[in-house]
Length: 268
Ligand code: COA
Image (cartoon, rainbow, N blue to C red; front, side, top):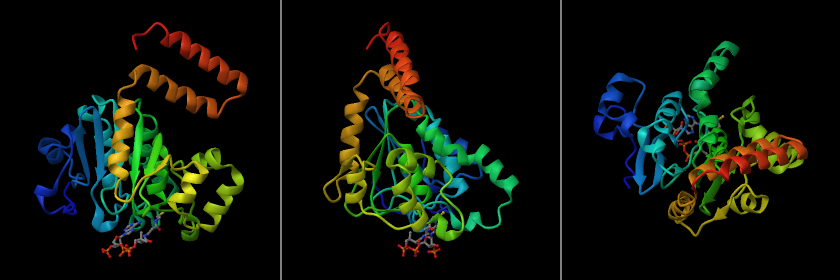
């Protein structure tokens, strides 16, 4: 895989799946080739390619990622791996775009490219984030939107937002508090302190700590395993898990039973 940073001025660096092909890019001036879409058998691999800016999540990049999620290649896949490449996952929201946004602009943002985090979480396929280097702020929120996370020992996690006078607001607080409870969420988010992949694995945020340099191969191996599972059972179970996480025990049981009744009539 190439490590060359995408250069907006260089058409050869523009990448993407069917939705990001030359015609789509010509129609979409926002597209700068910052998301690479590839098929590895039945697994779609989405790679953020803005390494020069540490894969900062600009609205352009988010728009490309949204387009990639809706591409034919991703829709036809049975599992999705989301990665930032060989050196960094993502340094979070593009701070140059954050300054001075009005409440109206922020509401508009979440109706637009800011919806990408929930779009990842809402994919019917199983998703695995393959993480190395910085995975901060919005980058960590993106990783947390995936079903599973595989981390390289060189990964560095953290939520710097409160130190910048804001807070994680793309599902970060919501997901962290469910995964870790309010006490550790307070510690991590209010203090903004960085944490290691070993800590993240111990707390259950990281599914697997890979051998050095093996985060992507391991994520792919897990994705291939998941791709072999019956897709309808996987998709419905993902929805039941999400709904159960925010339901009473009684409601969660009912959802399990209804989903079972629906799935039992389908072909595995
Ligand atoms: N938004 C926009 N640009 C960013 C960015 C971000 N979140 N993170 C890094 N960049 C840019 C830098 O401005 C720099 O651009 P330049 O080369 O044009 O000057 C380039 O990426 C490289 O960053 P640099 O700081 O030199 O890299 P580093 O490896 O020394 O440090 C980080 C990496 C991630 C520790 C550091 O860039 C950083 O702290 N970034 C901000 C993280 C943050 O606050 N994220 C949360 C936003 S809510």
